[in-house]
Length: 485
Image 1 (cartoon, helix red, strand yellow):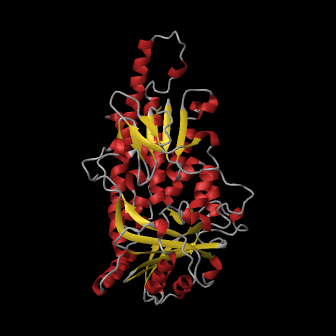
Image 2: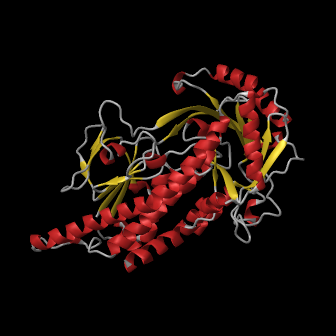
Image 3: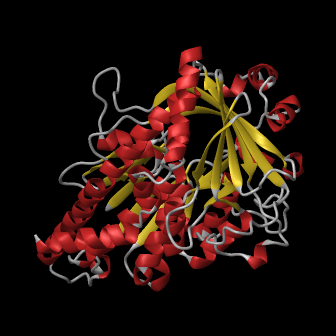
């Protein structure tokens, strides 16, 4: 059986590692029939371990390649812990755990404090980490032989055929039993799942009219008196500004490989990050954007805000990442005839969700667990490709059919489990994202009031639903219920 993953980002590499973990006896290295391959357009070499640019060193280059910094919420960390305890520990050691979202307004008033933990005892914290560091840690665990640098130009699927993959370089087409589109907001695989409808494809990602800019600063630029184990987030009439520590002290890291410790935060590492989000009607051309103009706008927008840290950051800001906010419409399905979408290809979320990477990780674990279950219930993992040439061809047809049916069953179950959860998160994120737009005087104060109310009920049903989620338990419950029906 051949599984192709299009996209070597966080969701694609995570899925590869979950499949490697759940089907250890079916990997090529074990001499059996399951083949896993990841096609990635860009260079995806492992980092040079001797280089300082490893995620705990200078992270500035990451801004222009795969993004700046991100937060892995408690539900995402549970996925990583299920995947690999050593990977989980390394992420915690290279990142920085935070227990609180400290929310202010442009006047400097503290209007809300919202937990960045789950409700466990002890609670699991959110981890801030550079996107490059997280990708490096995943990539380190994927063998070079599993990644091919190829640009996929088209994916075709039909009821009676295996999915077919075409390449931009004109090399021969490939086939697979399952193609997973982990190829982001401009997904090529999505066109196979949801063919274009007329001149305007209603399934395309949408630019939300919000632009994010950000960069890295020395953590020493944050005042020592300010509690480090928090993300400071500030809303104002013309946009949003946030900052926080995203690396831990190397000296502190060996003493903690678990984010359940909330009383004594580790010493901050050398780097912190900042970001600003604001209304920008026209989608900019990122390649030709005037960074000096972006910097001038940043200073004009936030230079008079009351928080002295914000004023200090914008006064000397070096613009690293420039990231338009893209979202994916609520797609009718994420699968069709052996092609499945995960991560941003299926559901690009507003950054205000705080769940982008965590939901991508959940996708990977759910799909891998369901594939193991459904294929295990069929003859789909048989070594049909290694049968003796004299084997009866008629006997192979039921095996192939069972395999295809099992893959479709897993894909349908994946959509059934994941789509309602992601939609609920996307709806909430859209409401919060609107608070980052330019506002009238009345709109500004209504925003502050709403955020204040959120702080009064920090553990509402929505928050618990998101951060207390455990994918393994969800899938186990789903399988048990399905078997009873």
